[in-house]
Length: 569
Image 1 (cartoon, rainbow, N blue to C red):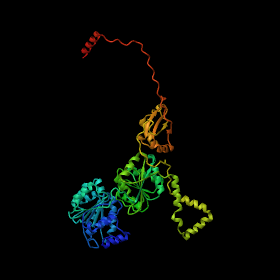
Image 2 (cartoon, rainbow, N blue to C red; image 1 turned 120 degrees about the vertical axis):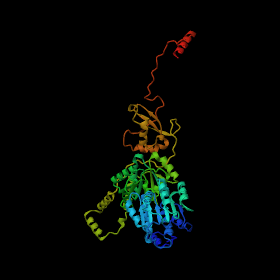
Image 3 (spheres, one colour; image 1 turned 90 degrees about the vertical axis):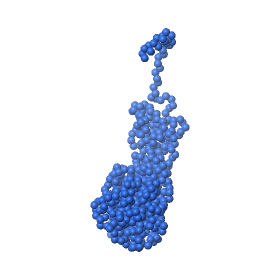
Image 4 (spheres, rainbow, N blue to C red; image 1 turned 60 degrees about the horizontal axis):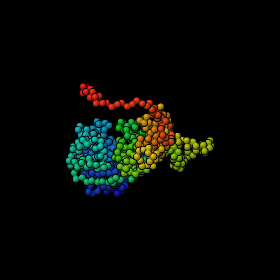
């Protein structure tokens, strides 16, 4: 083991967990120049930050001792932005300090505050909690910081984003001025730097994040799916990969709907959102970690800090609002040296937004179409043929049963029954429209001047059906998976409407209307005639007026008219 520490209790814990080499951030906080100093650390998600600050505070709270001293009030305080992250940090520090005799408590919202107060009164060495609950315990006198030697702010940028500045300032102001302050963040933004200047002294900055460098262990893919077929595309992706997956949605309602839909389709799924109790959220995460569930649908409450070691697939079913959320969602996979895949579902109408998001995050994503049912069934066949159970040595009982089956059924019948059993638990793939995934340059809106390559289509709706562009444009966009910028001229006739689609969107439009299931159906059409259109009725000519033009008024008539005008005024 190459960890540069001398504490036997921590080395024993690391060895028991199979740790051999420190990660980059762990190595950095253990350098001689970082000893006994405040630290301002930026590190990539999944880089081992929790173990890093656990090792960094060991010389401060342990010293040369092999076990922590008896104490009533905590020696170290860890502040985390979310309940899940706080509980995860509590679990990590518990095994790291197990052989040092540490008593570690968690104080988070959603849990029994009275039980936490009783545990604090019994004494502890380390407290891990969320800002609001920690402030509440301090104000009530349950948590006393007089003996505190180290404070760690984990995911400090997220705490500021969530509006916990007042709580953080209260806690840090209540802690002794002689404490060490270790601030860990994915990025060192201006707000983080200002917080460090205010509450840290002579802090050593450690930057292990290469600026504008995406996560090297994550493969990014953008999947172009029709807007009304996003769920079907998601189902097919889950069926193709057949691995543990974390799916992100933007709202609680979307999580609730998708969770119910996947359960109805036969997937083993759990959900995670802010509307669940803490016990329900813990149960969902434990089911995913232990393999009792294959899929977790979550809001961004799961985007920060959660460590799911064997998670190989992250699917962003809805586009994130910014780069930071995108990277934190993606960072739930590809952790601790493992490879991972991040899929971004993109409807055609949001393609440009997705391209800008990827460019802003400096991520190179390959564009692809969702898998077809034929591709999924071919992959199912490969998995069945490669199933390791087929190569296992049968037991005597299994051989006896196999001989009995062979006496009653042919080998082909038994093999067919095996195939049916293997497929019985698999949800059916969805039939979806396959859109061309290759990105195309977005051209200007087509004008009907003959200079822009375009094509014409028709709808069997015209003036007799009260056709109007205000409601027809949304209908065309939905049916053809295009935006209104892709629609050029529109010509409304008595019984039909013809419209123009820009050249760069023709492939997507043709693919979408090929799979039309509802009326009215869109069909290709010839350009409208440049002569008088069918619905333009000729204007009736007025009868000629052969009367002579009126004579000009003479001088006397002009004076009379002027006098009348003055009287009217």
